Length: 111
Image 1 (cartoon, rainbow, N blue to C red):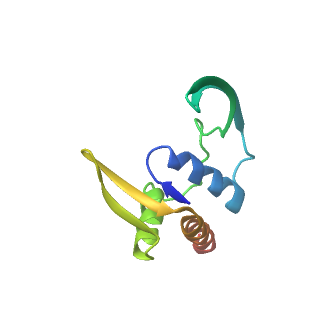
Image 2 (cartoon, rainbow, N blue to C red):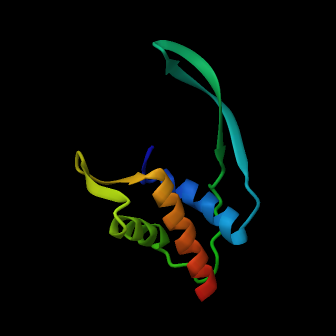
């Protein structure tokens, strides 16, 4: 399964940070959204982790998402390219998850 690390992925990595390192409790946002499913518009329930008010640990580098992405690219777990005029990164989900967890755990040990 492939995952794309763009703006929305920062919310997922924030959640990963909260779970692995012991940040705030998970906040879940639930809502209904109309989606096209099998060619038919249908209302579906959607659940996502709320991160509009993220918890930032003192000393965490402002570019920690970039550092995790760079570590994943270096490990061969992703590719860099462009989509239109935008920079884009494509990662394998499981290796990215393991690299992110390792990075966050190592950062916690170092600080």
